[in-house]
Image (cartoon, rainbow, N blue to C red; front, side, top):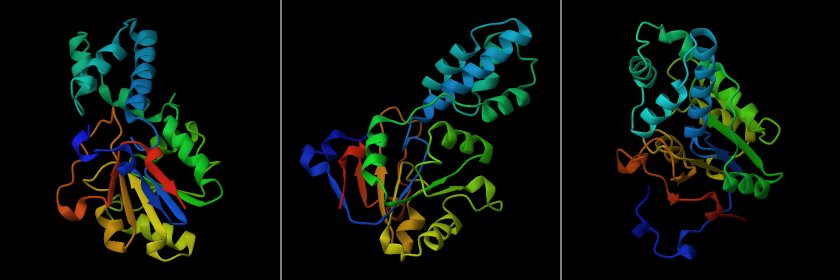
Amino acid sequence: MADAAAYPDPEERRVTLSHPVVVLDLDDTLYLERDFARSGFAAVGRHLEETRGVSGYAEHCTRLLDEGHRGTVFDAALAAMGLAEVDVAPLVALYRGHAPEIALAPDALRLLGRIGARASAIITDGPAQTQGNKVAALGLYERIGKVILTGLLPEGCGKPHAMAYEMVEQWSGLPPAAHVYIADNAAKDFVTPRARGWTTVQILREGRIHACTPTSAAHAADHVVESLDALLLD
């Protein structure tokens, strides 16, 4: 969580944006990625209960996630349940491909309402099917003008590669300075749009999965907020 000392007064946390093109990240920006994980764990847990007659897998996975495990969650949960022999690949495929039960964060819903008819876009990394399922579950295809799933781009063109940002500029027909990118992960989200002349805003949402710490000054966002309610749109 962001250091509260960096935000001494609620009034000082507000950021006014005058940019006509609002571009958004997805995971831990518009909803909590942790909720997707829990939804996926539940889907896999139901599968194991139906096929193996065992229960509790989702609870094991959630506990491991909350303890800070990432890439080893599935294997560790299987081992803890005495199911180490189970092939994890189909479970991962089910997790990634399931229709998630997720919802927009309340402040994200309010921001989208305030954007209204303004041009808006999404740039999101990850497997295309997974990210597309998230966008659909959140009802964003109907609300967002341009959705870019970098998983559909050529290999190596996920963030921080410039391709997705160039695609947004081509779509909007406006210069780079007319765009603002709102995202969470300073390791990859901001270095390229900042270099292109975009304004960048980092949302440090409570309950996020990643630390989101910038690896250099060039990777840091222009503004940092803890809630999308802090963004004022001219």
